[in-house]
Length: 166
Figure (tube, rainbow, N blue to C red):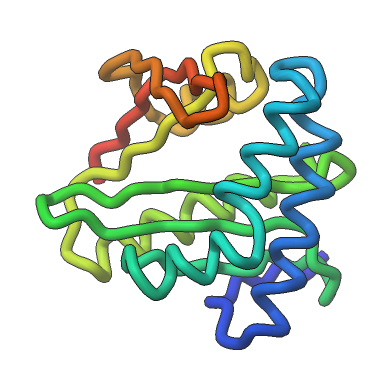
């Protein structure tokens, strides 16, 4: 099993990541949020158009995760103006979980944060996403806050804020 994590460098790659995001979100979040909210959030935050805007206007970077050259996950990150590094997106297809790939993904995030001179990595995770919460806690992230964010169209994100000190 060869896992590679590389920064997305072309529109073609970003489109493939956005297509994967749509699949992952529709397989992973059906027990946590409604189908309507999944569709809305994919379009607003995970679509090719949204990711392109994030890269151009908000200093995001995306990374494609491949196992044996097969795209199976992705990461979206953003350095903040302070000492923090925002892990916005870390998603892996369900059939690839339990192989240590997510751990490699997190190590890649930590390395990227250090390369940007950051001291802390933070993220938000849905309060009902038990699998992700377990992974982050096992890695050493701790809950530092809770937040309910209105994202429009009658939807909210009900999240924990996790932090990892590098």
